[in-house]
Image (cartoon, rainbow, N blue to C red):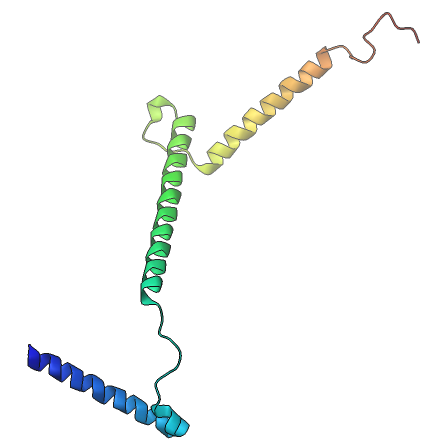
Length: 127
């Protein structure tokens, strides 16, 4: 165990010396000096990445739940009990909504035709 640690330490020292030599060849004597900038805050980076991944997973789960819920509602709303195993398509849903909208429009137009004009309804006023 001790020999393995000593070998790893020696390899790391040699690797650092090679890096220093490469820096010294490019920058001169200043290449041997260690970098004055502080290292990265690895604990902060780790926590940030963990929270981002967690947040993304929650968003994906919410989207999947909403999709399942909407599919369930579509199936429940537009499929008769005798056809439980068939699913309605989006075009069926749109057609159904158009029919409902058109029937409401027709009813509103009939009400307008059958109701008296409210502006001229008062009989006690004279023109």
